[in-house]
Image 1: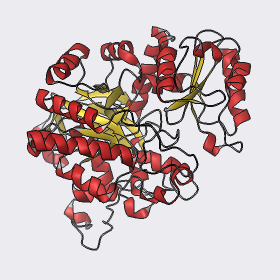
Image 2: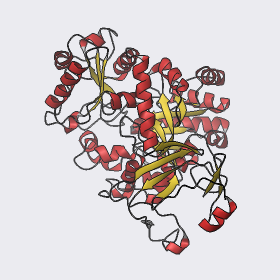
Image 3: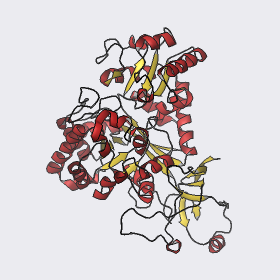
Image 4: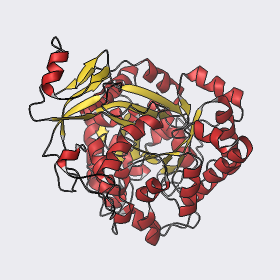
Length: 506
């Protein structure tokens, strides 16, 4: 492969390639393989970096271990807001979250914010609660959810220093580059990290490309255009919350949770969704929604169908509007999203972490859990998929995400290796509005965005269906992929290049 000015200009056999480009710098793969770089279409850059550089509670094995980690970190970092994330009480023997009193005992009279692994609830200290008094939704002894959680999250981030936030951003983007990721989509919003964080992030320089989304609903095309121009974002979507999460019992369900007498929380109804979609479609702005529960998806589908009836299906499809997560869909909803050209930004790591008969999904939903994350049905219906992480909820590790999609805990929901890899590369570029037909591939005319990997022998995996759509014969030149069995070691990144510039080298 020959690259000039950030573009692939030639592909073929070695001898004519060297003859055509005698003065080129030569990078010998030495047994490694090269593939299109990944794009992660759903990340929270500052929050991920704060976990990487701060208190990571994902390794807590019990409630007491969690509190021990908090005490140790507080003693070593006595100043400022104590920020931590990643705890998951469903994996602990105690099966409960820390209480306010336990957090106060661990950190003393200082602000502390410790978010659950799904980032939709948190436990905090009294000192942080005092900054946002009267938060609705606060129940003594229980984690903060919904609007109360949104308020304390913004307050906690505002209490960190600019140096702390910039260090976090660099840690996240460095981690992305070291895992073969050339671009990420930041999913921000007023309830995520706020305008100040977004402005700082857009000023931050790094080799990994950042596309920014802002999750704030609008009601008119003029409002949509003005907000995009004011903030410098690429779309009004990402984590525009229609509901919350399954782990925090805030995903909006048609029927109550199996383990708690609630049907979750709906933040936007069909009318608000319709208004936002209409405004963005008329303004030529990409819209999107965070939607997990089946009732939330009902509202989203209703909104899309209303706008399509008013403005025409092609007008809606042309904008490449998105749904994020889309975990709980029925066949009618899948058909509607496919018909309307909606792109689904999905996270297979969720199923790897919480799926299966003994996982959190089964505890929350019972028999409904087996139907979650129906990637195969979505792809078969024609929905364009983009695979990402929702970091820090799951790690910035695209090969792990691809492997999770291939090894779905409900086998009928799994993707083929080729489909999963395409969704993490070409599909993710397309989700970000790049529809040139070559981004995410390595052919002449494509951007030279690729990664070099050390891996086991490559293989061409056959499709699961009985009719093969491609040949597995090596002479067919169908590109191979590393083994993606659940026990296979993942490839190690040796170099990441974005538009011809090296942004990571091992």
